[in-house]
Length: 389
Ligand code: GLA
Image (cartoon, rainbow, N blue to C red; front, side, top):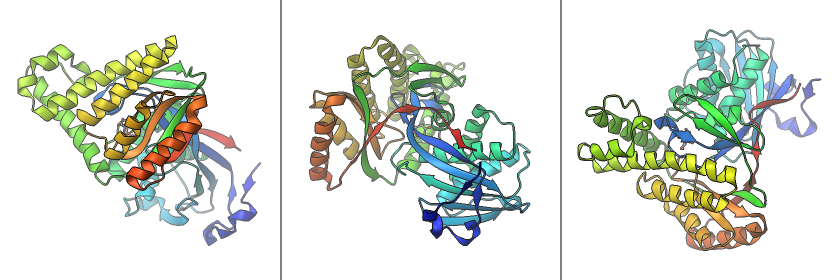
């Protein structure tokens, strides 16, 4: 069954008036329970895909090389020739072009296609609309042209698209979670060997609540790459005494103390945070498995302190919401989520406390910053999939 565009799509650009989708791909955003800025340090993360998605409708067109993309979110379309893929001025277009370029590097044959993109995933909220877009594009093209790529390969090429076309030297967490999550589970991913264990998300009586600060400070991208560089430089300094340390994953607390004098204060703080955060992820998994959500909540708060003071990627808006939650009995844990400098806090909260907390936190946040935060309840969902064919 093909999906013809509906009445409400009358505003589609002319190139899409005859568009008939062959199938739709649903590609989710992600949350991360704990394990921030550990992925590119070969550490542990605990993300999962969520019930907020980007939807991509695909169809081949009659041309050999010409492609048309339309984003309902941006109400913008663009076209390109598959023989002339290059970086663009428009960042959202680069997520798409980057994926196509990475697929072409694998010597996979594409021909002309059209794609309409829609989304209920907030952009800039730190829930990885970018990874969802990349993974949805990779998954759709794999399906449309029968490329034979597996999910992990698609996650990895989506990450490279972001490095090479967007310029953010991100880790693998977002793309892996968007592609490989399972419903009602968290994904304990060991980023050193790229192997995941699925942990049942046993949060009966609780909700996972995101509070979107609705701010994105402009230094987010540049500081992200700077953090990555600082960690790599710390490893280089550590290697002088401990050459076997290929990444911070190979560095114990003892080694870190041993080389403290060799590191700058900043390098030491960054490394200390990463070592501690890796431990917290493993402890968090134990706490969730044994139902000790109070301990898990404490680990979330500790993670936030590390991100704020040692890794220095928080901001006053995120700190405000995390501090506010501490005064509130029904919230067991909260922390900033994702790259930092804006986006969401993630809160583990008793179901019955959600309404009152959202209302009080929103009022207080509005009074402090003049911004109405957005409250989003999320559920762990499965990764990128085909929803109609
Ligand atoms: C962004 C990146 C991820 C990860 C997080 C921080 O979301 O895309 O790879 O590094 O920040 O944990």
